[in-house]
Image (cartoon, rainbow, N blue to C red; front, side, top):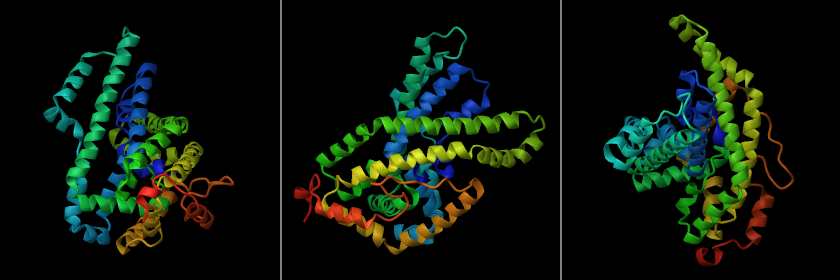
Length: 347
């Protein structure tokens, strides 16, 4: 699924824990801890769109039209992109005493010692998860501090207009429609309703990318010469991606199903006026969005050329293929129904 698993997307932030996993001869306990933390990380990302927004920030740097729309030169766009990608750990260590206290408490524990108790392992994992969530919240805060409200509005408009290209769907992207408190509550309820499907998909994400990283590192560790190892690194990566294509396709297909369910349910929360605003962005986006999407298509085609095209999506009778426009039948059905918030928010 391009939403959550496009290789460049996940590689952008995935590895918070797998980097440690790849560099150590870990035991079953360590593996479990790392996977548990990574799952929490992925869950937060899927529901808050950190990867999606950071990818837009990176994409702006390659789009002259987008830079111009935001009032930025390419150099300024690059500077802002680098700023939002700043590691939040040292920032929190300097500015947040609670985070620093959690870090100090965690470093005192030895969860991977042969004599470590189950309680120690659980405490270590819980502390790491707390720190992880604080880091991600800081990333979101940093994003809003880096870009002006008007620039953030345009970034979110791009996410809406581009959702059928990238399949990014998360509650926060609809904030540009001035959602009521009731609508926000309904979006929260949707994520709770889809919790089992979400958790299943997160398990598949972590399983696939952990296996990918582990396979690559095992191949590299078998080569003693550093120069030879560096020379063969890209070959090993491409070979691993090819070998794991069935697993990647399985993960992407489950993600497409999840995204399809999210889209329909979240669309149903929008009032008539909000729905019209969304259709306008999708059907007739501003010129800068059109130009940026065209460039992204070229980039995606190149990525699929390298990694292999994903297995075709087979929609059910009441769904549609992700990436296709909203079907006319759904539009007509949507226009005949009354949605939560319509009375209060539509004109």
